[in-house]
Length: 278
Image (cartoon, rainbow, N blue to C red):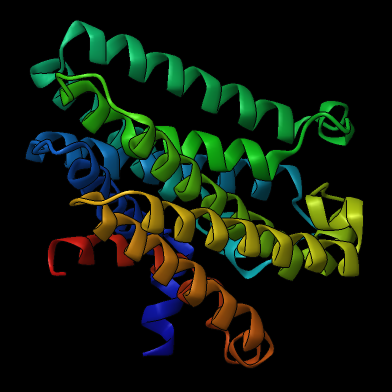
């Protein structure tokens, strides 16, 4: 079982599952139905971006890798690169068949921003710039990508409640990326990689994580009290996710020893699909 979990984690399949579940959550909030082809393209795109990022890290840090995920990508670099090309080609072909011109423009802009992000964080010059906070950038790219399909299908203008739910979701995504940075701080220091945790240090990063969780829980709770309607279910899910991250933070040392910390953290983004069951 542990080997299966490690393989899923190394291949970012749990991230793909979380992105699809979160996209379905976005469709609920915006009251639209996502077509199957979009969910397929989303899964392929998320896998492509994460795998490309890991392959770049593995190649740039060759010979001084301490991260098991990067070791996996270094060991299977050629095979993964071939699969990466096939995945990208499949996604493009599906997009050509089904996507509208407006969707092409939006997806192209987002893909361009993701590529710029990867190039910047991979640069030995730009990665050290203070303005380049990769955890925030990853959270924004991830959140916009997750909500993109549902936003295009929304015919009526969305209201303030939708914007607030999106912001709350993005805060959680930012928390998760910063949490990963905290737990990979020692590895990043050895590999001379720049992250939020290497910039702020252990204690300040922990304080920031707690602050973000408090902010998110208060933000979603206020929405729950102020507004009524179907979107209340979305806020309940976001509060549940925030509390799950609190619990994850408290037991992080035990999960880290078991090698399950990042796996469990990413799986929390599968919780939004429960919005259809409450």
